[in-house]
Image (cartoon, rainbow, N blue to C red; front, side, top):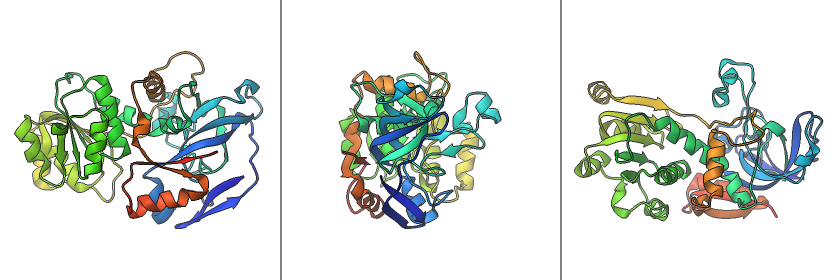
Length: 354
């Protein structure tokens, strides 16, 4: 099979390697679509992965090609999405079913081989079957969709109404997916902060009106307070000091902030910003990954992946609107460089396998 293998920082090679064999409790997946996550860029070009050599890629979907011992053979041929986090099942969060906070997890695409290959080994417990009306591209987007759902659920709080002012700052893939789910839930008093005309267009494509777009290149708090009394709930999806502080300045008294974006550097609050947190009695929280009922096999469940799948399969949401690039596996490196160098406008870069 063909696979992109990361040997070291900025050393990613497309090579032939043997197709792996599934072991006990495992399946062999023939990958059909794989998305590039923003976290793949520093992993490949700056920091490296936890274990190398490694096949990166944690946003993918495919077909069950083969099963290992202890796995029902009727899974073969099923179309599936993949939850990439492999929990230890021994720590405190795992005992509570909070696998996203596992203290000693493995992870496809950063610690174990992932989806930038024609085949990959995945535990059977980490599969979610795709209905026939879900494309493989949409299946590959389940991972970022579930992350967005998790963030939204973490952010919503008692006392927040559908008329409350909600702000999403940062319109990359996760930020736009948060917008998509908030609109789907009926939060119409929604504002977004972006810094590109292409981001404005994508937000409008999702159903946001033009007057709800705030230009992040200007003072977002001034713009927001000219239209509202401040944010009751603010999603920070950038991960920079400026936007982390802007979130505080944009909040109404008693407002809530959910920090979503991975940090680009050390995060620091200036003294006057910290005073605003105290005096306005703001509530700050974080979010990480997504919930997946790894033990659920039948029926409906309330985890983030099931929610995302239900909403997309119902036909109301179109996450593929965010796909700007479709590339064959052999050209994955071009997609990575587009994202690294920002030589083209992009949102979700997707590799398709045919």
